[in-house]
Figure 1 (cartoon, protein in one colour):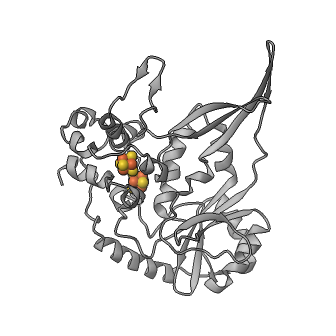
Figure 2: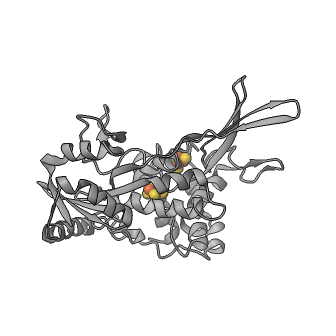
Figure 3: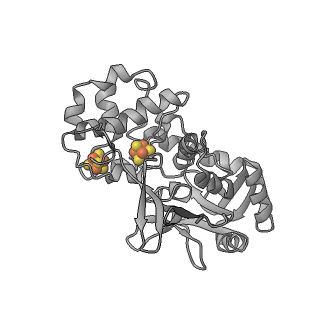
Length: 339
Ligand code: SF4
Ligand code: SF4
């Protein structure tokens, strides 16, 4: 384990950024935290969560997949990918780190998504343990420990210092890079910080929320439950919950004719949108109730069924604070799970 003073962080960020692009949460002009590329003077936001999750780094909201031009019967295809470069994401919370495992199972399972895979290969994740979890946090429901985040490197912050621990070969390389600006140390201060965080976690309003009622094999039990009508009644189908969610991964692929060829791109989509499941034969989910049910059944039943029991929610709480009608996965779990 290594450590540095918080006062030395700017110099450390500059040192890292000289080797590869460094992204970190900073406070935006509206006071909300957003990820931004580090530049001189950029200060690490200590806000708990960024508005948008760091999934953008591996699965951006829009990206070009290819370009093509046709002339008669011939077609010219242009690979639009830039050579991927190494980068570091600093300050990722334990819940968001876990979300990468959920996305990996989608994008890295055969057939592998080469766009996503390339970014994962080049990205180093530096997590930071939570010290002040929010009332909307419930990562513990899904077995995530906010005081012991995973990632290539895990960090712990005290009042004056930051502690660094490598977990993977990529993490070891990163610690080598910052070695001139850090020093070897023991883990006593980290353990004390972890105990403080654990004590706060126990007092959170959602500390007792359990996911035991859900999981694979529960489709019959939950699919036709009458509560879906009441739960979905006020849903606006705005898709906000899916866009802020670190584990939502629906996308659409579209062609755009520039007048000088066609760009094929993909962009995030949402299972909450009425056109999302529109296919040649029609739409398989016609009502908002069906779309609403799909979102939560996928997170709590279908995904775990196909992924060794792993839920597709990490309890980050973003949907709890962003839904305009205050509907969210916790309300669904409580209503259907009988709490
Ligand atoms: S469903 Fe809500 S709480 Fe769960 S990971 Fe998505 S945004 Fe976070
Ligand atoms: S649950 Fe809330 S955020 Fe999600 S689509 Fe419905 S109204 Fe929008």
